[in-house]
Image (cartoon, rainbow, N blue to C red):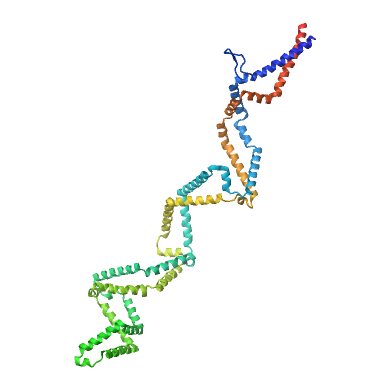
Length: 505
């Protein structure tokens, strides 16, 4: 009987002792004082050493369990890559069937920061593009490309250029502008000014007309007069019949009768009859073909006499207004009869024909003897530098980038994947996986170092309430702690059983 009682007492003592020891790890949670005297073993071991335990646990986890190598290895594991691939494919699958635009997706991701993001993107892309273009080597490359394109165009046949729509459009506009200018007041005044200046210069030189006017012109003029002798005769006939000239001729006839004949005879002569006979006589004279040669000879003789005169003598004989009266008909003759629309078009066509006779534009430039290649190169370099440094170019680049990004933002997601969904999915998955693994390999050690796992664990444990910590530990090790309690009971029972046996020996 005493063996049973000893064993039971030992078991109870062992159970209670271990149970109490486990409880004293956590209880009491706070320090207890009686009459301001601290009660021994308060608070419990774990609450009392909470900070030290937290630091030790944090160091153990950070230095031995969740090390940088362990975390990186886990983040780069095959399972992680598979999870990433699954996520990407799921996201892409959703997008390729969605009516949402790129803008909608970004707004969903960025929220209120979307406007700042797009504005910043436009600004950054524009600055990068401008900075890239401003690079010396890039400007050289652009200039080289433009120069090569120009030189390539110069090898084209002139005829091909003349047949192009652009050339004909420009040609027609130029011709219209020249014709309009020819009939303008500005052109009239310019010719007038030029003729007056030339006349003033010739007067000072005191030269004869034949010294100034080339003999080819005077000879051609005489030939022209002879060739147009009939027309000249008919023009004189027409001029006589004009009212102003008819009155003048009648006045001359009347004055001749009055002054050359005696008053007695003049009384019996009809002035109107004489005038009519004079007109009829002139008409008959002008209608006679044989007289046309005489008229041409008279005019050519007048031309010869005029050519022998000095310009200054003719000008000085004219009143000041007379010079303008002489110049004005010359201007009208020049602008209406000489430089007419037909002459302008004909001149342009002759220049065009001459232009087309060359093998290429380059051939034409070669024959001018100008160092055109150097000139073109200098112009290209100068224009590129000027354009790039111009503020308007920077504004234009910013505007173009903004338009491009805006167009990209309004593209529907499904249109990106249309017809090539699987390829895009695979490409995106590879890019994401590659970017992710590259980031983990290059940046994860720094990120983990900044995180300081040991410190995080320590702070987290210190934040736990003691009761909550007890609950967690008991939940994790409840079986083990119960086993320890019953083990104490078993050991107590064995000791209680052995004590009488050992005492009887």
